[in-house]
Length: 431
Image 1 (spheres, one colour):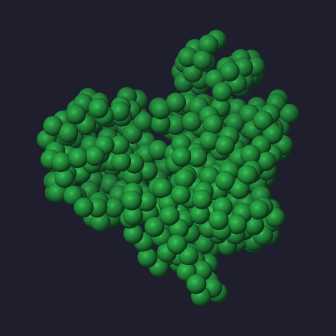
Image 2: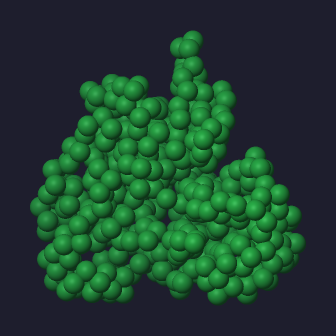
C-alpha cells in the first residue's frame, strides 16, 4: 500500500468515531491491550504525561509539549482529532510521524487488525506508542480521546496525570450527570501517580479527591496554587499576570495562543511544570516562558482562536460543546468588531439546542456542515437555529459559507468559523 491507500484503509476499514460517532466507541481496553501486547508493549518503554478533560486538554497538551521540547527533551505528542492530515496526531519535537512508518505499521498489524477489528482510534494509539518507543523519546504528552477510564490511551502508567476540567459533552457515552462524567475522567488516576486538576466544581471535586485517595495519588488543584490577576492582548499575544501561592511577586507570561480561555489552561500547565520540576525534570522559568511564547510554532497547533485572515478578521475556533461555546461567546464580547458573522456547523450528537440558546442573536449566520456522516445537515441546523432567533442562510460546505461571509462583511467586521473540529479542518486558505 502507498500512503493514500493506507489512509483509505484506516479511515474506511476501521470504525472511526469522528465520522460515525458512538458506534465506533469500544467500551473496554481489550483491543488496545491485545495490539500493544503483539508489539511488545511499547507503552512501557517511555515516560509520559496523561491529559484528560472536557475542554482545554488539547491546548494544555501542546503547551506542555512545547515547554518540554524547549527544555531540550525529545518530546512525543499524541492528540486527536487531526484537522488536515492524519500525521498531525503523532509528533516528536513538532515533527509529524513519517508516512513510511504509518504504511509499515499498518501493513505489519493488518493480520491482527483483521482478526480483532479494532476501532480507528485503537489502532492509532498503538501506532503512536510503537513510534514513540522506536524513536526513543524521553517524554511524551498523551491526550485522551474521549473520557478517561475506558479510553484507549489509558493503558499507560504516566509520570503525571492531568484533568483539565469536566463539562457537558459525550453524555450518551460518559453519563448523564457531571458526577458520572467526573468518574470517567478520574479513571486516568493511577496508583501512586500525582494528579493535577485544572478546574473543579462541587460536582467533581469530591470525586477526584476520593479517587486520588483510593489510589494513594497526591492531588493538586491548580487554581488553589495560582491565580490570574490580569490579562491583555499585545501584538497578537495573550499576556497573563499570575500570582502564586506564598509568593509576593507576580509573573507575566506571553502566549502565542491568544484565546482568553487559555488563562485557565495556563494555570494548569504551570502547576504541571512545578510538579515535573519537583520530580527532577529540568524545567526553569526561562524555559516555561520561551515554550509558551512559541507553542504554535513548536507544535503546529491550529484552530484555537486562530486568525487566518484580516480586514475582515476571519477566526477559526474548534469550540464544539456547551462549555467551549460559552467561552467563545465571552471571547466575542471582548473582541473589537463592528458586525458579527458566524459560520456554524455541528455534529448530530452534541447538545445542539443548549448551544444555540447561548449564541448571540445579533449576528448573521451561515449554516453549513462538515463532510462526514455525523454532521447535522445545514438546512436542519438552520431550522433549529431559527427557533432561537438566529438567522441566516444554508451552505453545502464551509468554504462556500466563508466566501459568502467575506462578500457581505466590511473590513472591520468579525467572521468566526466554529461548532465542529471537523468543520475547521475543511477550511481552505483564503486568498
